[in-house]
Image (cartoon, rainbow, N blue to C red; front, side, top):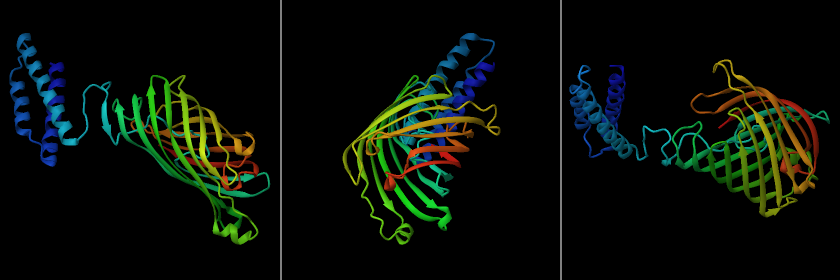
Length: 337
């Protein structure tokens, strides 16, 4: 009996959903017919007769196939009761490749306030994100497999807290990538643009400053490996086929992340991350960024909201002042897609 109730309940819910979708989308398959098939199948069941039970279950499986077809017609996307099934999915939920937790120029929403070695207080704020357009792979936001086409974009702004929060500079980033996930491995290949700008207030305070037209148009290839479900190792190489203003062709990033699972969503869990940024424009000097803190992860979306400390050293991440060196420590919050 429990087995029948489970199968029937699933088909009935799908039938009700299809009724709504059919009306909304104007599909040619009538919901009444589908629900009628489910009702008819339910009358076949006799828990004391195994043969009738088997016949009824067969009918329900046929109805399920019709339901999946109607769902696909109504929504314009593939639906399957098999979570491992691969198909085309448009505007999919979730990502196959996630931004580096400690990457200073990754697309996300974040804010970090820090004190540097010259006793300056800066506020780095990033507004941006990463989204998927098309996926061929499995459904879902977590542990999905296949390949996906993504768009990314962000504005990374630096404000000078001691100067009435004047804008010092802004880096604009935009890109598109093909990403893939299979087992413990992740891959991305794509393009991104970075251009740097100076704030008006900074120019007013420093009238003799000569702005550099720091611009790159780069191809990027990256690979990631997940030794466990709560850790990631990654590396990427970017080659700028067009650049100006002191920029140079090559850039590398390496890093590691540890994100233990939380016992409950409310409690959250600690995290730790390190990113090494290596650019030809500063003679391949390593610029490490370290983060340590506490985070909360959505059980379905896989998105993270984090709080913690950030330490940085070496060439600054702000492209307009790429020749400057800084050592700093600060506090921040990050929202990761």
